[in-house]
Image (tube, rainbow, N blue to C red; front, side, top):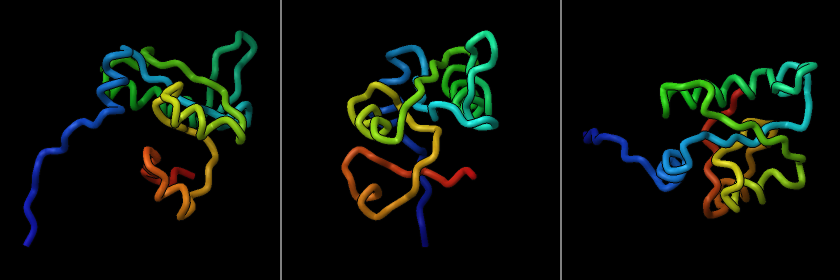
Length: 109
């Protein structure tokens, strides 16, 4: 038998709300996932997932900032708080699952 409880916001959500904007780490450029168009606006699946989450948090898809990150800088940016979350290619590993502060939520693609 299980018991249901309301989900409680964690420190990351508190930081996002205090910042007033969702800052997402995205790929440095992969067509279809994250790539700036001719005017420099980022577009693609990863960018849209970040915008969708901003709607859930702020009811405003424009309260986002996409930060392009390389494979070597993505986790340090996440750990330092430069970005609140990553929407980009990353494999799930046991080490990443057990590293404090990192939470792999779901495989997207």
